[in-house]
Image (cartoon, rainbow, N blue to C red; front, side):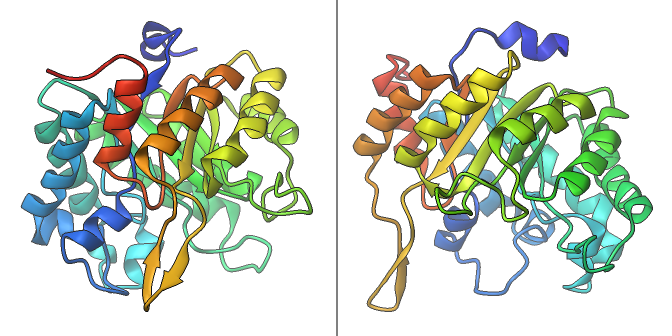
Length: 292
């Protein structure tokens, strides 16, 4: 296990909440590239990161989830890949101001191996470009989040490990009759075996479902591994109310369930889509870690 992760144990460690919905609250438009805001609206991105640090997050992420060259190219921004990723880390480090670690966010490429849209070699090159930029900018760790394909996340882990930083690998379990598999059919136990073999320092799950559904996922991950477990759940499943997307969970409910997820085996706990600094503050209060 990487020394930085070892130093954080036994936990629990409070991470941050959603970025996409928070940036939307800052004015991000539908279909607009969130990552380019690191260059065009750094003040608004920093406002999101700072709010999480002030709410009690011990780990905050970066606005780089969609900043692989493949995804940026869809917006005509492929040539800005390095600049966007470096700026994302620099913004979160400024916002953290020594109060929180900065784990750099890396998401899927948007290209499917199964559909021959990309090769495994091309995946490796794409992830190496992004993770190198994130590491050079001073990220404390690399978070690979919201993945479903074990081959893709395996390529991402291999690239991220070349930086020498800790690597967290987090999948989405929201498919199957019990909603306990990735969309590729992978179970938590199969994920643990594959991600451990690939060299991940922390294994986890995020997005796809509300926090009450993560209690059983955390239990299964914990039963299958001795590595730290990372959990970031949504604020429930989204609903459309009067034309607006609304997430039903409130911070107090989320914090209550978060304590159950921790008891089930989570080492790192935070929120995904629909959560906000208020959710993180509620978790911090629940754990007796209110900031002064």
